[in-house]
Structures are given as structure tokens and as C-alpha cells.
Amino acid sequence: MESNNRSLNLFLLSCVFLFICTEVLLSPFYPQFFKKVYGITDPNITGFYIMTCRLVVVIFTPIWGLMANKWKNSSFLLIIGQWGTGLSCFLMAISQTFEMFVAASVLLLIFKSSYFLLYTILMQENRKSTTSAAASYHAVLQGAIVIATLLSGWVIQMDNPLLIFWVIGIMECLVGLFSYFMLKKVSKTRVMDAALQENQRSLLPQFFLFGIVVLTLHLAVNMVRPFFTTYTEAVYHTSTLMSSLLYLIPSLMAIVSLPLIRKYSDQLGRSGYIAATGMMVVGLFFQGIETSIAGLVLFRCMFGIGAAWCLAKLDVLLFKCSQNTHGDYSKISAIQNVGLLLAPVAASSIVNEQSISAIFVYASLFVVLHILVFLWGTFTREKNREKLHLHKEEKHVLYK
Image 1 (cartoon, rainbow, N blue to C red):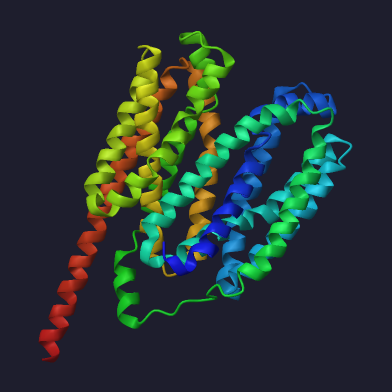
Image 2 (cartoon, rainbow, N blue to C red):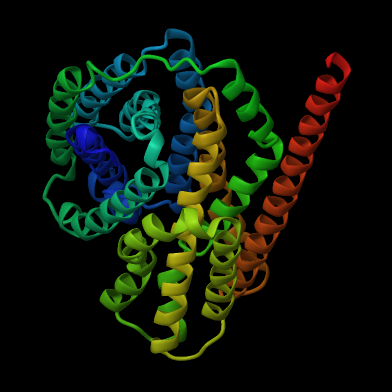
């Protein structure tokens, strides 16, 4: 990242940390939370709440993207989202019924769907070092997940867990205030010359194929999560603490592998990406085969490093090739949330029809499908570039 942007980068990454940490904070304990606060024990209610939240994000993320593209002032929209999120947290804190809590959560997520703009602003302000920016983002994201998971056990033990939303709301409003001063100098729009626009148009992958690439990767990454601790406790007879630590290994690997991604991702290019997906396939497949705790740790590490590499590389590809950063990334973000929505549904179906260990096999197959579509998209893009190059040469000869 450029040194003159260091303070802005630090602020944006801090906002990302807060955003992810508050979003994940209660997710491991929703059933316990609803039972303690509202006396609800039906697991279907938890499923309904999670699905509702995902659908809101899927619907409203592209809407924020369209607004950012139209207004050309993404920082202003982000500040609105931050303040709206803070005020919505206050409503959640005073929700006396489950229905009120759901309504406040929907309002919260309508505003919080704008937070993908943090990432697009970060990448736009670091166009000369997109790999470093993307790797830093994913490392901070995984770090926030780790911290939030550790804090969630403390929050659920509070006499009134709703009080945490007062704290979150105040923090969101303060961040919105700081954003007003920090984001004043953010570029509202970037105009590219005609030659660069034509070149990037030729490099931009077909959106349909890129969407499949993103969806299959997020399905593979998220399918194993809902039943992982259940799997380790049943197969390896681990304690709750040990299962939690094993669960967090991929997130920790994303942080550890940050220097490697920064240094070698661009150098290795497509071959590095293929190797990373190979690590994911091996890591996922062999997690489903009973070996030993040491073996499980090894395969979790392989999976975590491979996933971090692929996620960062895909983001770099999108931001380098896109002319409509906010609009394109909002659509990709919505596709990611579709993957988050479908992953637990698919995992539940596999467990009901086959076994818990079968989840890892299917997840590894999704990674295989992912790399096949990725390579096909790369091949198609290169063919289009060749055609464009030949067309330019023909026109040059014709007018010569």
C-alpha cells in the first residue's frame, strides 16, 4: 500500500474489523440468545431469522451499488449506512419482542449492506497495490471473525445480552462521524482514457462465469462450517474448546499467510491460483477422512491458506478489470451472500441423506468445479483478447 494512504488504509481496515466483528458476534449462539432473551426454543425460528437476514443483504447490496454508481460519491453513502446502522442497533437494544427484534435487524441490514463500499474504496485508493490491499482486507476480516467468536461466549453469558447493542450502536455512530472527516478526500470518480477502457473491457470476464466462480468458492468454504464442531466431537471426541480452536484454524491461516500472498500472488499468477485450489481440494477431502488430530490440523491449515489465496486473488482480478467498481462488486457481494445462504441448506441436506463426513467430499467437488469454470473463463478471456488484437491489426492494415 502507498505510504501517503497509510492513515486512510488503517482507518478503512479498522472499519472493516468493526463491521465483521459486530456482524459475527452473536452468530455462534443465536439459539441460546433467542432462548435467553425471548424464551424461543424452536430451531426453525433461528433458521428463519438467519435466512431473512441473508435475503435482505442479497437484495439491498446491489441497490447500494447502483446508488454509488449513480451519485459518484460512495463515501457519503457509506456514512449514511454507518449512521443508519448505529441507530438501528439502538432499536435492537430496546426490542421487547422477537418480532420487534427481527424488524430492527432488517432495518440494520438494509443500512449495513452499504458496508461493501469500505472494500471498494480501499481498493480504489490502492490501485497500484491491489494484491496487498485485498490480502490485508481478508486478513483483517478473518481476524475479526476470530475475535468475535471468542467474545461471543462472554456476550451470551450477560444477564441481558441486548445491552451489547447499545455499545455497538455508539461505536457505529462514532465511526460514522470519523468517516465524515477521513473520507473527504476520497476520489469521487476516476476517469480512464479510451485506450485503457478498451483494454479493460477486453479483460473483464463474462459476469455469468465470474459469478459461478465466486458462488462455487463460497459454497465450498461455508458448507463445512455449520457441522464442523459436531463432526470433530463425534469423530475425534474433542472438547468444546478444542473443537472451537480447530474451527478457527482457517481464519488464523488467512492472517499468517498474508505476507506470502502479498509477495508471491502476482508473481505466481494463474499457476499460484491453481496450486491454491489444489491445496483446498486436498485439505477439504482429507478432513472428511478420519486420521488424527495432527492430520486434521494439517489439512485445516492447507484449506485455510488455499482459501485465503483464492479469495484475495479473485478480488484483485475483479478490481483490476472492472470499470464500475461499486456496481460490479455489489453484485459479486450479493452472489457471495447467496453462497452463504445456500451453504448451510446444502450441508443439512447432505447430513440428512448421507453423513457429516460427506460434506467435506462435496465441498472439495465444488472447488474442482470452481477451478474448471475459472480456467474456462480465463481461456475465453484470452481468446477474446486475441480476437480483439487481430481485429485491430486488420483495421490498421485496411487504413494504412
